Length: 160
Image (cartoon, rainbow, N blue to C red; front, top):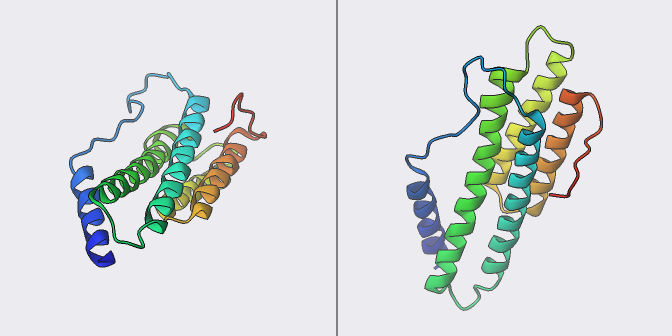
């Protein structure tokens, strides 16, 4: 029964993510950048991932009697949400920071690139797992990247 549930969830996630288009800041030299906004978006994505993971855990812990159609529906939606927000974080790092903002001739290039890579790996691990510690690791990686990129401690007006 669990195998059938997992197969149904995996199929739904794959079918739901087909054909999505990545949205990122333009790749023309417009000179309009909002780095702080990108960091806040990644932290918001991480908060959503953490909530999705908690919901997946809550749903699966209640499946002793077998999943209902509603359980399968909600589980699929939370897994899909987790995937979408982890992918969004990866796209922000790749399409915004790595292709436009991190310059190879700038001070701290290797440190910034290493920290950006750590965010991408942490986001990937959020896709692979439903463990709360993966969302915590992604949050930490984003804040570490902020420190490497901005050269200062993060200062956000609100919690994510």
